[in-house]
Amino acid sequence: EDQVTQSPEALRLQEGESSSLNCSYTVSGLRGLFWYRQDPGKGPEFLFTLYSAGEEKEKERLKATLTKKESFLHITAPKPEDSATYLCAVQDESAGGTSYGKLTFGQGTILTVHP
Amino acid sequence: KAGVTQTPRYLIKTRGQQVTLSCSPISGHRSVSWYQQTPGQGLQFLFEYFSETQRNKGNFPGRFSGRQFSNSRSEMNVSTLELGDSALYLCASSRGTSHSYEQYFGPGTRLTVT
Image (cartoon, rainbow over all chains, first blue to last red; front, side, top):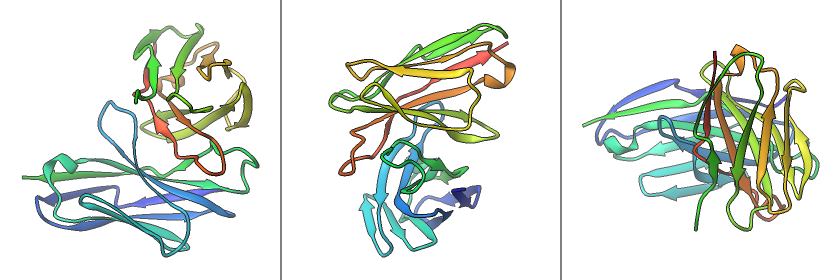
């Protein structure tokens, strides 16, 4: 069974204080690893897809990296508007055949950035 | 480009009733997936529809069902509601092919069962 574990559960940072969020995963065969941001009362907002170990993607102050067992979301010089819950999800290529719909999510990391 | 829309946004129902939620995907997307989000279990996959066919299903009881129409719009139905069905129900759309399967989520429907 696919498993996704995110750490820490909550992270408090001062504005400008860089840090990283971790996502450890177990799947039979990784089709893709996804990062989402979710604000309270809203649906998750797509950030990145990573497909293979060694891949990196960047967007503004965020950079996502992938190894064979985990992914990191690096936040450089965060601002208060980066406060949100960050979700990691995986899609297992062996779980759904031709289905590309099933994502297995971690519990998320609640990030709070203080001014 | 319009995003994923879900209606209604909020719903209050009584135990034993049934409910139907609606989702309109991004134009051109043929895959619609449904998820249940609760504080205790997080986001859990319910099912995926592609071209009006259920392509995958999560571990939920048969009270949870869905369908997709020819215009890719989707509905999910929950019958005989239980208190534990209170949750945020999220719909996600994607092109659903091997070349493009990133999922984009709607704002969700908040269901409260009393």
